[in-house]
Image (tube, rainbow, N blue to C red; front, side, top):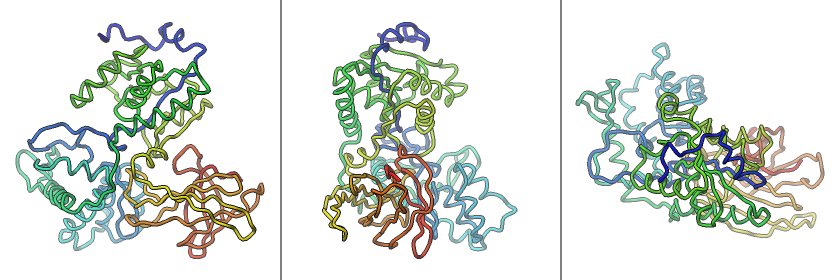
Length: 460
């Protein structure tokens, strides 16, 4: 049995002995609440805490929504912006880095509140919640709370939206239950594969590819719920040695019981178990504990296998660290979209007027926002050059992205994009990295406006 007493420290010589001469792959990826695999605690009692497994109920939870033509990263940000008619104020709130910062701006009494706010606020909140839970992962999580009362208990005295000191109208909870009922009655979500098994299958797929050229393959897993756990499960299934790199010994102590049991099994079967930090550190500064664990994994590896949607957080920091240390990074997120059932692939052939044959792989995506990512994704190959084009735009509609790139085979040639809706456009500038699922972000001049698109793996 593994206990904190026989967990290795990061400097232990056993780690160097195991990894020396091996091809080491470290995994980093999102929690299951972003990838749709969180096992909700069982029970029939009221849900009163919007944290942990039920964090998706919080208005702070990442879930892009639209209000009067502007996209916001969270319901909280959109709701706060809706208080004002001044577009400059709304823009500031949309650009806030966190939902807490958006809320602070929205509560600034120096700003002019719209006169009809008290009459419209409940309707606006309901509309935003309906958008949020049209996401398959979030909608299914909401459906899983069927039969349970949802109550927004708080300690800051809000007795309108929630319940404080046993008193309150619980308007947010009532709206969530109303939306839940409608989702249960009318949901038309695509049939998704089992999210936890999809992650394991995805990890197996990539580990097999990597092992073909690297028979000494060894894996380091950070053992978090989601992609990390899937990678450890895949390594165990494929009989690939793996190191369980724990941020602290009590990593799983607050997880659902089933998740704790799986974690214990994977830790038990690991070739080595490393506790990078202590429980005391985690209690004092959980983010530092996670960051130290990620840095340890990157320091030891040759390649980082990520499942990363481009949003900020621990996975983002780990990928950034890997890039800074010139480690190879492979992002599996696009494959996850396809394997989970959120994206359908259709392949057609297009004959260009100059005779060049184009293999056109169209991915039609009904725009259910996948947490921080709202996009239409299309992958194309023109004259042997592969790239991904992504157009931001209206939410919750279906588009078949019709785009081609001309002259990409010629180095330094002007690159023009033709889009079914926006017409032909000229690429003005580019920033970003192909490692992000947003790819290389580019400004494109269309006839009506300059629009931000993302083009990854496009070689200028």
